[in-house]
Length: 82
Image 1 (cartoon, rainbow, N blue to C red):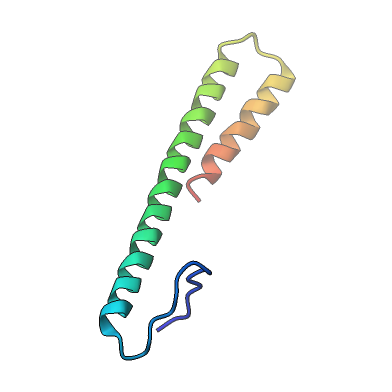
Image 2 (image 1 turned 90 degrees about the vertical axis):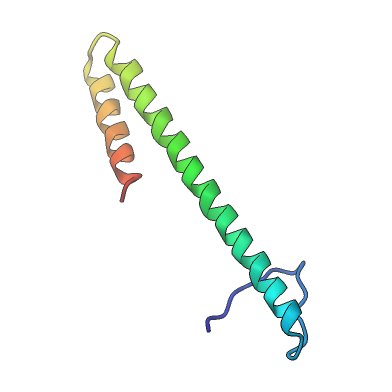
């Protein structure tokens, strides 16, 4: 078993209260799932925003500053998958 910070809003059940421990485990599992889902959605939104910005910049007349920015955005996009 590993230690987990449950925050200050959740009380720790008594050692022999099995039902309360299971309830706490379920609550923490749901919170972890919610956070993971939120992170996944935010990653997709960031990816979409970066892709749209790259397309917008490529549609303009090329110049050295814009090309440098496109390369930077492409690196950020690549780092989302790392």
